[in-house]
Amino acid sequence: MSLVELIAQADERGLAASGLACLDRCVPLLGGDDELLRPLWASLADTGDWGAGLEAARGKLGAGEDAGEDEAAVLARRMLDAAPAAPDAGEVRVWADACSVASLQIHRLLDPASAGTPVDACREGRTDGVPPLVAAELRRQITVLEVVAGHGTAGLRRALEVSVEGRRVLRAVVSRRARGRS
Image (cartoon, rainbow, N blue to C red):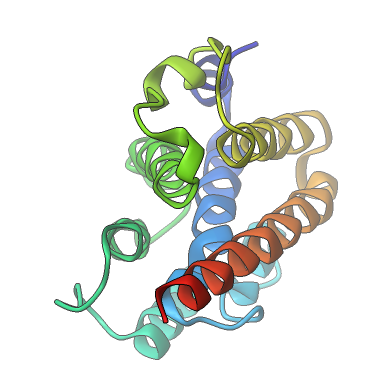
């Protein structure tokens, strides 16, 4: 099943987890630490307050786009800024879909081999020629949606593990990229 189909079929918890996982993997672009979004994950497991966690994350990362941010960081900031006030709101589907696209675009921007890779095509299941960094992000997004759909709240732990793995990969890519610029 394609990523687009999985998003279309996901319930509100799955959509919130999907959007949050995309944002979580891209936090290194904003200078956030590994624990920054943990309260939001807890709220999806019904043990925390989504709104309070979201405001705390926004407060720690600052609001609005920084003129000095590159395109990848701007996309990550937009994911955070667009997060709905509650994960059960009607706009969570739009946010999760936008996060999916933004995260794939970020990975495309950071992968030197991916110039011209159409993000929409890979979301629809056409993955021929998709470079490794983008393909790995696509697999992570699919896995998050599948585990939450298949296991509900119990799937959130695996979704978080997938997100942590992706965050480590992205952090390494960003670090390598920064070393190359200096």
